[in-house]
Length: 256
Image 1 (cartoon, one colour):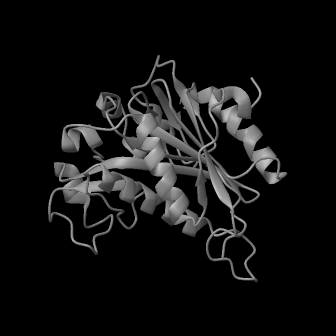
Image 2 (tube, helix red, strand yellow):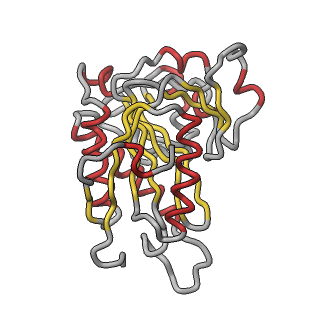
Image 3 (tube, helix red, strand yellow):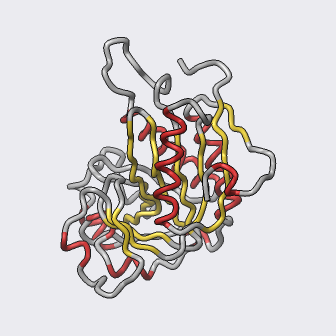
């Protein structure tokens, strides 16, 4: 059971350089560990940037020679791309008291938290008219052609659908947990340019085809509006109270 009255505060930060947000998240994680800030959801866009997670391999850089915006990051996963028209959400959340936590557990319920992120992504996409789901053995959120993928499908059985484009990736997850506090998080493709994904093997998944809300439906919310929806739905999934702060400069929660 979560602490009564526990809240999730959202902050819309606009467009922020990826490297800047690395240091911002590190600072906020320390503050959250010390109890200096509440559970916080950072909502933003990044300028065009390729990011390499902890599981990235040298081959992930193939074709990116001379590309200035390639950043190594401590999140999980492999290579992906961020850019305008994509919602990025970074939860700075203390997992103590979140999810199932038996008295004998030595660690927080990370798997349960990831499942809550996935559920919030799927429910948000449903509000924008996109059918999506998770696939056993694959990271992220996928949208299939109608009736193309049976409920029991896993990474092995959907390989042909990925190869033909009948199953497309619309959202990604790459998390970090430090002393029970989360950082990094998710991205949802709203109306972003999908061309940069063609230069990489996105998320290390062979043949992975990316899609967006705009491609699937013909229109998409702005990242700022989408962030409000995702914040509300994630707070509900975590049994937290969604709190929108009074308008204030984005820099007010971290050092310049």
